[in-house]
Length: 385
Image (tube, rainbow, N blue to C red; front, side, top):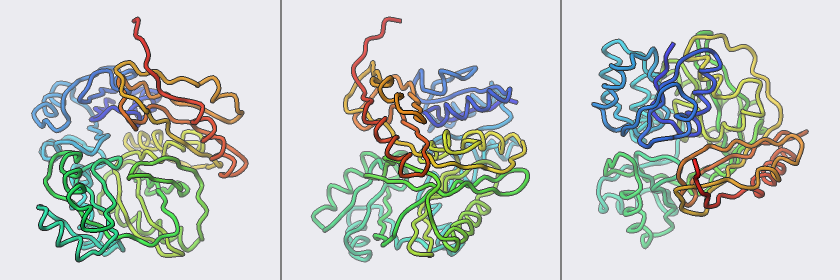
């Protein structure tokens, strides 16, 4: 079979590898050349994922069995059209459209499915933002309705912070919707990602993944995260409801806040999740293998987990020739692995690699992953090939 990846970053690269291990053909698409998944795929195409005409051209020329969106910012109207014409979009074109826009997924979760969420308002102008923030109260979080990895997100503690939050959201948001979501702060004990797989045999859940986010972007994750049986049952019920509503087959990253046994829905991604990179060491089948198995229709037996952790390596420089150093030192500790993404350029805070570790428990794994990540850094390199 042939998979057309729309988005070819570090997560897409792992999806491509897993598909190719199972004997399938991969076409990797992204807005820039030599993206990570392009380095391993059979074929690569460079164009903006927001260009519907180019997506259609790629589908018509490549004739894929599956169209697999791997990023949020995609011309979803074209995906809907292609699906109506008989093409298979993973998990569905509707899921890609709803989750691309925070307004769509929040209204589905809170207003249609009646799932518990944080209080929220939407604003399309600075005046509406002021009114919405006043209704929600301070502190609150301002996010573009379309973004990822914390881009355009601000924590606002008073009215004086609103002008900068509005400008940042308009500048950094993807897709330029001209709209933001204002979310009230949630008093939670911890937050998790519950990887949920819809496949031919039903729905499977991975063990909960704990994670730390800074400015909306993940800084570490670990699996399994300890939680009560009641809280886990509630989390699985929320994940089941939202993924059933989105439909299709594939892996979903469901983000949840947990307070005691209460579970509050945050967000969902209809694709492998950055916090789920830990599964490359913590599970017998990584989130990427699970995604591919679900797409193609292969069996998904018991998912076995052992204590593991991940810590990304961020760039502190801007470079057209980045090199990740310190890999030798990072790998001296037993049970530690490194994945260098191979991104051709770097900017400040861009994820360039990830340190992975296993341990007797998650505390040990987290300590080892942090130690390994701290030994690596992104420096200016020189290309001679």
